[in-house]
Length: 359
Image (cartoon, rainbow, N blue to C red; front, top):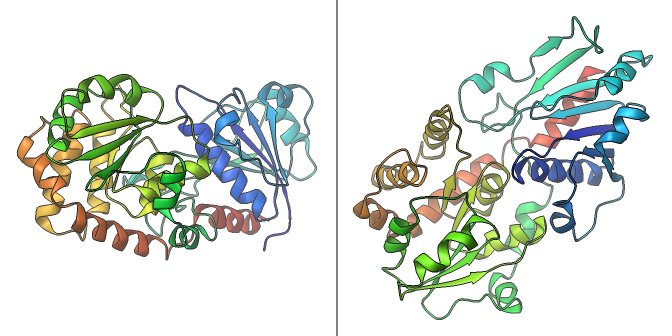
């Protein structure tokens, strides 16, 4: 194990829970591996429910402003998703006798540029960090990237989990013959079409707070085969358990996508929409990797539904039906993909190795 170092992880909450969700999981994982973490965040309000089961020893959550005024930098500084560090903190980094290892953790993508950019050095030629090096670190799905967040023991915990008992204890158990879906997404104009496809079989929709609870119940009320339950905010551990308990998971952004992939269940990804259309190529790149070894008919149906769900193609009832009737082979494909990915080195292990190699 790498000897214990002091890490400073910086996170700005932009307009959703993805950034802070990734940072919290990463900081927890590193702390549980014996590292000392300070998570500097400008809005910690979401941690009241994301982390209501507590934080591990070694992890502190600190207000962003405090880093600006007084904190001394640790051994490793992790700047997440391009957030700009406080200038005064960077000045103190440059003044250390031994400069911290400064890493910019980027967003997850399957696009080819990730392999080219992973572990690139960015010398700081001007500004408060002049003379320092910043390193780009890209999570990803191939051996030439930084990998995915996967805590030690995650898959064993899932294998030992009693999903029916967990759902029943919360009053969320399905009725006989119902399939169960978790629903977490941005506002989506394709809901009427998706619900019409789902209504061809008895279905229980477990709706996470936000857009699902605002959009789905009224639209589903006229479709008798659908039943909805609105969920409270869940801790990260309970959200994982929810994904493990469902037949199909609708997820959004980055953090919930990765958790759904580790759940090994069929999924429908609502990628973060961007005004410049950059989400389109990102979705296509991911589908190319995820479906590389899937059967051609199943892959074609899934591609069509994923594009329609993301506003990149019209919804086809035939494609929706073909996709839903293939959930069982979709589960087998998801498990094969998960087994293959679980052989790769995870993100925190790669970060620890990179820091050790950087001296």
